[in-house]
Amino acid sequence: MTSAAKLVKVVAGVDLGGTAINYTFLDQRGQFLIDGLCEHPARSVEGPDICLGQIADGLAMAAEQAGVRVENVVAIGLDTPGPASSTGVLSKRGSTNFVHAEWAGYDIRAGLDRRLGRPVTYLNDGNAAALWGHVAIFGSENTATSVSAIIGTGLGGGVVTAGKVITGRNGFGGELGHVLIPFCQIPGIEGIVPACNCGRMGDLESLCSLTAIRRTLLPYFLKQHPDHELARAGDIAQAAKQVRGLAERGDDLCRQIFRVQAHALGLFFDEMINVFDPDALVVGGGAVETSDEFQSWFLDEIREGMPSQREEQAGIPIHVIPNGDTAGARGAALDAARVARERGL
Image (cartoon, rainbow, N blue to C red; front, side, top):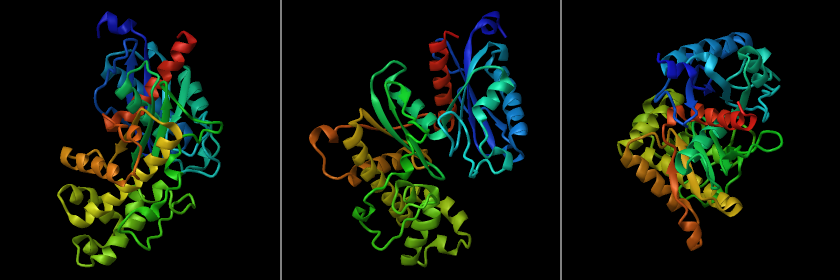
């Protein structure tokens, strides 16, 4: 390790998932010091004390990989799945990723702040990824607005304007998966009943997520194609995980499923255009972490799913978030860097 590396001030980005923690570091030049995934086991099922210890241990490991000293980390950006408040207080009702009883109502930002002895900022994982996508497109200094939809087990995302995430009064800003869409306008799904885990019917997540494929879309299309190979899979959850790969290879049924998801995004983005008039629309997650051919096809289908628009609306670009696996950690680091600048750290 060089003496210059020892002296540089950096911020860390910590993306806490259900099973793994991903790390990155951002220096004063705005350069990320880790290119790919840098992971450590989360052990979140064992409760806050064990999990925060894992974050601290992994941070030391990641710092060594990045060629910096932990002592030079002036701030840490943390992101986690929700539900949680804008300041990092996890829901008292519990969470899929934080099932241990001690997580209910736990202030994870403040807990990590105490554990590491450094200021910690907090974003939910969708907002963090959206922030990275925004900065990757527009740079760190900008006045642009973007709307991001990130497709995973659920549907996350965020709205970013002038480089800052809109989190809202209670932290639910950017809960884009639960925006209702006029799904009856999507062709080929007559009679479908898209229910979301949140209790809504016909929100974006109910059609555009891995959960939607498992619960709704795959069973719907398999009824029409009972001889399809996925009908013989037995376990619908395992079959759902095969849909993307088959769609990439051109399977017609699986392409129909992703066409529905793309058209749902088209309807959603149309709503966002009329609310925010954004400079860009951004897509991330599993649906676009694919081959170039499938990615291009999917983006074209999003456009196809948009209602007729005015000329100035039709020209809004659709981007794909780069570095998808590390987007959350990078966005969390960017948020920490912003706070570090504001505090003169």
